[in-house]
Length: 250
Ligand code: BV8
Ligand code: ZN
Image 1 (cartoon, rainbow, N blue to C red):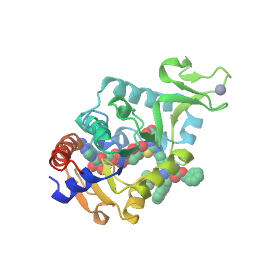
Image 2: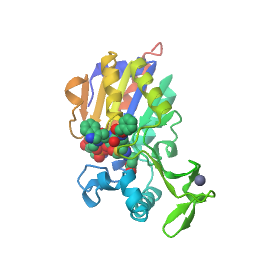
Image 3: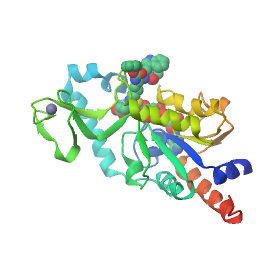
Image 4: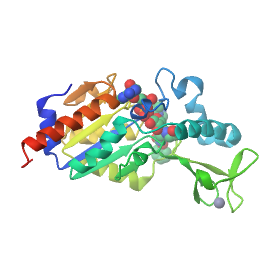
């Protein structure tokens, strides 16, 4: 599945940067954006996940997000998420950057998570920017309303909106400092998140991609593992641990 050198590199690495996309949640049953039964097909996220869509029809946009929240509430983290959470025990400094808004990395036990596109289980007031967890929202006529009277929106980054500055800065710094970068389950198309592994490539890190299909990143990295995250990651973790046991000095 992967080369000897990948296992060695990961087993010995001090800092790993991981970027995940919708593909790591696919095996949990969360539809990806561009896949077969992807969210792009049924809906037009480019038309719904935008500030204009929300201004034009906040009730329709909230219907889409409540539909996605219901799916996320009904699924569990899969072995891919769990393997990444376990990897935090074997790598001294692991930073997990996710484009996903489903919160499944936190639910699977990962600690050092950077959510560059926000979190669907939180809403934010359009007036005063107060945020609320979904289960504390007060709904009126199809939208949650804030104590200040403002209308709440999903606390996610829409197309045309900038990503949380501090979080993105941390992600790029981690990409420039890591010795290994894993790009998992992302089509590597959505900017600026898709540039994060490029920073690792430019900084000379060992970059490994896990995806059933190749992406624009594939030709520029050291190793492409064609496969599903839920199958590949547990096996990768097993081999890394075996290697570390054989060579405790790292
Ligand atoms: C910004 C939150 C400007 C909301 C999301 C032209 C060129 C370049 C850029 C642009 C352009 N036109 C417009 C832009 C900018 C735009 C952009 O990049 N568009 C793309 C479509 C070209 N970006 C933006 O608008 C960003 N903001 O640029 O602001 C600005 C600048 C300065 C100042 C002010 C403003 C904001 C982008 C964030 C949008 N929000 N999500 C929500 O979720 O509702 S993006 C959305 O796409 C999700 O976060 C998702 O994660 C992300 C990326 O998609 P992927 O995660 O990669 O998912 P996808 O379905 O694409 O791929 C799944 C992959 O998994 C596939 O490769 C598949 O093979 C693989 N897979 C499937 N099964 C498995 C698997 N892998 C492993 N295991 C499996 N089992
Ligand atoms: Zn408010």
